[in-house]
Amino acid sequence: MNLITAEKLGVVLDGLTVLDDVSFSLAKGEIVGLVGPNGAGKTTILKVLTGALKPKAGQVEIFGKRLRDLSSQLLAQKLGYLPQETEIHWPITAERIVALGRIPFLMPWEDFSGADEKIIETAMRATDTLHLKGRRVDHLAGGEKALVMIARLLAGEPEVLLADEPVQGLDPSHALQVMELLRGVAESGRGVLVVLHDLALASRFCHRILLLDQKKIVASGRPEEVFSPENLKSSYHIEAQYGSGDGFYVVPWKRI
Image 1: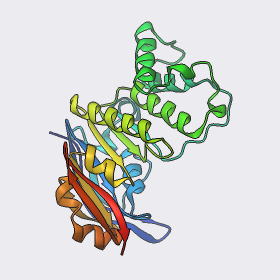
Image 2: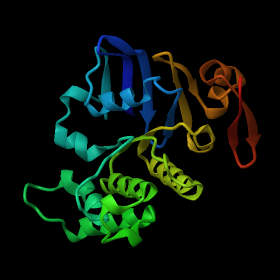
Image 3: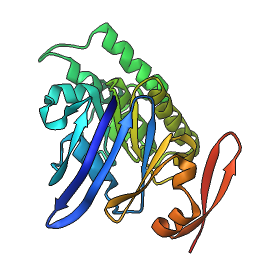
Image 4: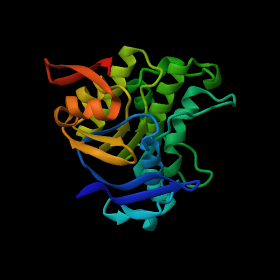
């Protein structure tokens, strides 16, 4: 059974069509990369899957049920969403931000249990943010803040993770760490749909790629299938260098 099935999605915003006849799926055990040029509609797809945007056409099923039939609490427990930009302006510590990932599992006014605290610590350890405990998030550097938000996502232990450019602003080491984490989450039996602009990371870590362009998915399949010279020329207007050391990878090389 697919974790997510989207069929013939169409989205209109301010009178303009931003998605047209978009269909795809996400299965257990896979990380799927959603790629495409700026403005192609990648973030819009994630917002539809969270219920934040209602499509004009088509439907979404999550865990075998229509999205509209799922309660907000169940959706919050089973689906984790990391938006592209999250502004935090209040003086809250890093560990309290991570702890927010456990909120969907608490009753009103219920405090965190010892099990919750252990999950929070595990998420911070996995993202290399334990040393940020006690630090105010509004005082952190951009990359540090991004890692804290990823820890919050992991603390919710969702079955499906939706991440919008999670490596944006991270140095190469932490970017690799985040992609390794997401790949590991997927291969533990969950599913990850991740928006990426870094084609090298997408080709290195994703099981499948969805290439979005001109409001549609124009290619879908394994990285070596989707990142063909023809597709990169058509959608990105670039040429790339290819390699196959420990696995297939592509490096954008020059503009056409």
